[in-house]
Image (cartoon, rainbow, N blue to C red):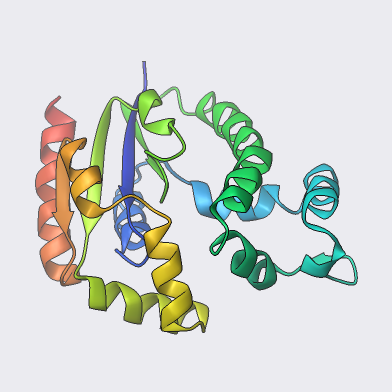
Length: 194
């Protein structure tokens, strides 16, 4: 049976970069955040979001993810509500995707909130990616064209590195991509033996 290797880390830690590095070896990788963005475009999900958050988070009929993020990352209950709308749909999509991955010994399931969502329970092993907090803030500000304050709110809505590390089998310190690649290579050797 195909093993599920969870890959997680706080926002801006570089976990997607590491996921894509694993993918470069032909390992099937499921990037939950990217799939969630696609799932959020479905008519049914959009309808539920509009009902729950109002038309203020839409520009005409297009979901404005930035407006939605400003709400959910300042109000924890709203974030919880959004997660109850999106997570079941992503879980179903992942399960359908996993059914197609029968010829490989393992896949990588990459998710920022692997522990917070309870998805870690479905994983055979877990890898956490860490990075210095200032690097994370700078990466997210540049990537999302957002403010330091909003990045900190998102960081504070997630588990800490310490919480994730305590529950992980492997840790990749991503202070530089070269270091992270070396650590990823060591993990790959172990996974191929296991």
